[in-house]
Length: 590
Image (cartoon, rainbow, N blue to C red; front, side, top):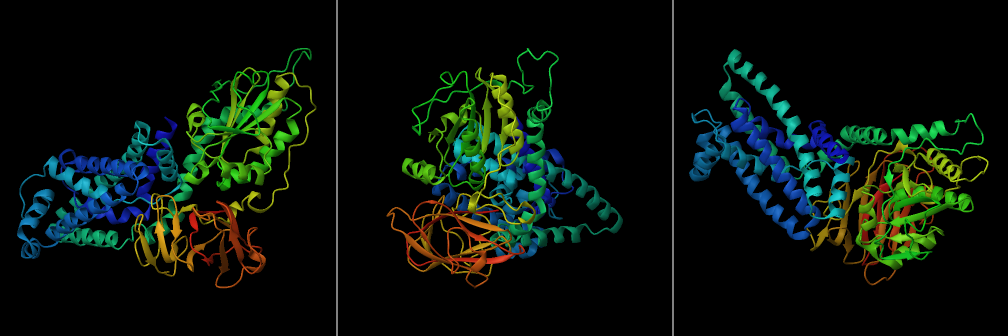
């Protein structure tokens, strides 16, 4: 239920996003029409079509992307005719009378039409609008689409995307009701109904042009990141805080709690959240034979959901390692559950190498089929769950941070299990490179995927072409835009360089820039060179390159390429690959 609420609120917030601007003319052209017969069917058609297309795009592969492109072309033609019929039925009639008649029948909004709009015509207009709507990918939509990709085609996926679309439709309906009253007043007082209709026609054509030129997913998406991402993150934080409030507040109070009778056993105030889910279903265990919830009874268990290329997980790992080491003799068992986000993270050898690189010595369950993930009803990387000695879940936390509270919860449950250790200072890991905590106050760039399923803010002159080799050229990017140069094949999850001397450019604003890269199927190392504002990075180099910007992609993982040493400001990042075959997945920032 919480995820449905988050998705609905995220959709409602799209009214504040510039990405909504191109479709507003299609919606407001219905101002003054009956709500039940005109506005409601149109908004339902828009919401339903978006949910269907987004579900197929998340789970259906390149064929779904191609089918949606054809649908968008038809929708652009239909709405272009609609705009012409609003602007001037005579001009439209000269171009093509049969199609214009269809446009007029669909909208019934021209001055010459006396018939009432039909539910069917409004529904068709809504479907066309839904095919063209490309909401900016903020934190909430990112969460919904990630869940869709992981869970596959099921009712939960469809419900979440429908809730998101319903939220957007609700905010549009409110705006349309208010707008209708304003336009009705203008018509009565000024007698300019014909001019208003023509203005709507011009606005519709401008919206069609903006979508055809890709402004809805380029310039407007860039403006949207700053305008709505903070609102969406606030919604996520507020709802997560409510769900965690009991656990967090009680952890804080437990450290100062005393008992009247010192002979009474300690009982933590952490709430019982239910029986611990099963740990069955892992395809393999590392550092340990398979473990079970029943077999761990009598110990305190920390379950850490992670995936090895996730920057948030990487920054949490030093704390999990430190807890495992500090409390291993006190009765704590740490279990890492590796649930992959990308296909390459399903390769057991890749995970095994990551476990070595991160110096993880505690047990790791490889959850390639997401059976443990689903048993815990988890939706986040990273996520921490604490299970007490009786096999009950007593605490959870999602995301980075909250380290002191989590460690206090560990101490409480160990004390409750009979361990008489003296409370000590919390761990303070000496994290370096990508493991270091982010510079949150200076981050203005967000996670950006390069595969076509979730790609946003692409700024090359050429449009992305799914699963097909294409020559791309670099366009000067604005903040949070990226471009390709050279011959690349853009797949669902990654962009693959087909010929040597290809580049990726990104204009970003953050202390750290990371890029998930791999050498491709051949496994042959790929050499690369990084420049910042056209120069060698020098003191601003990341942990995986030298001062001249040179580095090598030898395995598929996250590479830290930039760490600004001085004041954090917007910079132009370029990585040029000297060899072909590299696979690029996602940018993250810190």
